[in-house]
Image (cartoon, rainbow over all chains, first blue to last red; front, side):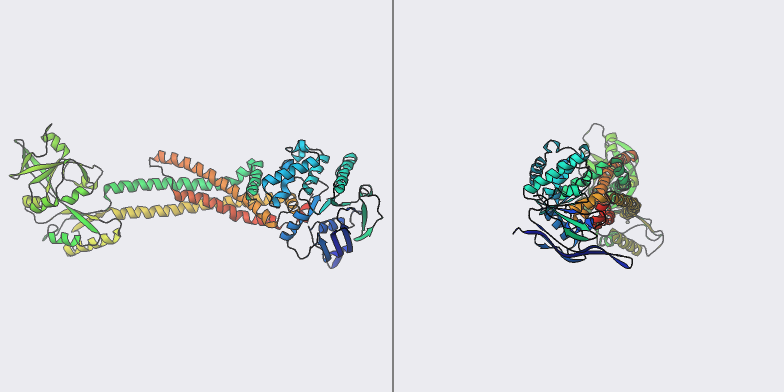
Length: 230
Length: 393
């Protein structure tokens, strides 16, 4: 049996709004095994972002148990969460989130700075990854000199450079036109075939179908969909 | 890691050149003024002090006007003055005027100054030829004399002066030395004439028929408590003249120098106070700019945190930025201040010497301002919730 990289049990996330307790995630059980490509599909307001924040260790659950790569994410302070994020999670955002003041190479190197990797090794790894996403000819460009698709490839390179347990993508094609979006999805599929574990959060069923497994999030509850393709 | 952080800070600072420059202007002006003012004041004070030193630091000049019963200081008085701890020696001044025979001619009313060996040790002038009067000479009332250079030229043009004999008060004196007085010295200002002859003071006492010394210089240890030594000397003088008013006057240059020094200290504190206000204002400017920078870069902070930056790393990054900013202001201020003080010293004609206090104070205070005023914005950045920061997109 494949190793469970992500294991959520009875996760609840609620906020106190005035006198009322607003439940965003309602007793969620969710597991992801190594080398799965999972889509989390849900309309806006379903709790997608909150789920992503918890998976990405940007936030912690109100109650329940969450293990990521075997580590219990609970009662951690901001410093510990930052280290977990650096090591285990690779984020891909809808609007790429590249730093415009840094070159492509520097953007990709960024997570390794926080992992205390020497500048020589950073450079070597970054060049390899940038080649992998097909942007070797653009290493000295700045993000605003690149097309949206190229920017998202840089962002994906940055996400995978630390060899994280999970690649966590939040509407990765949301800011792209259809054909560029498709090529980004192709890149995800390739990365999946290379053995990466990917969780993609989206509201678009068409995009979600790129994944091997789809789960639906509705009003804070999670439902498993039938497997589509492998 | 630190290298990365400083590189990033530099990047951010140079990105917004005009804004960064305006931000550091306050610190820059503060440091420039600290360095310029302290250096110029220091130069001026050093100049005054050097003048004072050449006038005779370590010298206490006493004029004994005496009382109707006692016209000057007796040997006993001098011995009691010498017994004061810190008094190293004395040089009496006892003068008279008398006709002098030389080379078969007579010069009327030539000034004769009685001196001792101490006189030649304290920079009153330069022996250009021969030697000065020794303790042996004064003790034995040797008939020897030291004449001033101008007099030697006048009386013996083109001749070897040393060994020549002149007649003073009917006795023959051998010239043993030629002296050129230091025109900056106090003793020159007080000397009886430009063209005087110096003989052992014990001889002058006989020539003038006086048993008392009307004036003398006391040489004191400048490393000691000069003020206390001065007080003790005064006490001895009061004893010598039975506390009679106006029986003597005393001039001690060291007390004047001390006064000037304490004035300089006060001046420095004042300048530092004024400059600190400028640095305070500059620091507030930096804090303001850093707060703006933190809110402008909320998204960047969120992203860095998502990528694994710990709160402390974010804090160090922003702190580094404010320290680099204010140090930059400090360094430009240092350069500008140095140039201005060179110009200032040239303008008022005092020697330029960059004081290390000024440098340490200038650069140190700017670095400190960076840390103190950068702390709050950096802390604010480090506490930003990454979710809130990223939601701003």
